[in-house]
Length: 175
Image 1: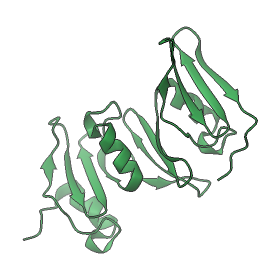
Image 2: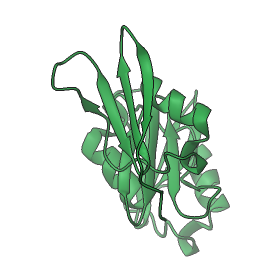
Image 3: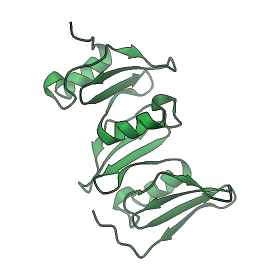
Image 4: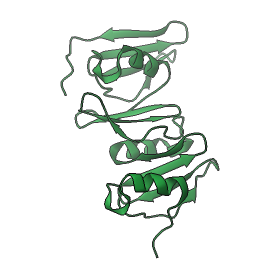
């Protein structure tokens, strides 16, 4: 007997091609999430997560792997609020989550961006800005007073006292 897929997750799965689509066959029954808020199904090629607040969204590939390593919905990212989507420049892919985003390209891999640094990067134009794509997850500064994210074309720093500070490098994004 095949695992059960129904409701909003079943509708999303059908929209994405069902068993013949990129997600393929279900490998779990629809199941409640450990935090008690949402539900999910895992499929041969990815997952669909649902909550009443976010709806049903597909996560797969390296972005799903990154999110899983971060702790799934129990991480600060929370639940997906978009399906995995191709970026406007045609190079990368992304999922937005309740608490941030994960961006992926073949060259940069999957990297998490969130908080004020993500907000500044979005204001600048996301990956189409001079910064390009993130090349590392956000890191804490060695002095413990702030955070930073490195991108193909520079770095965004953040401190509680000063907010964000963008420093472009001489590098040109190449993807």
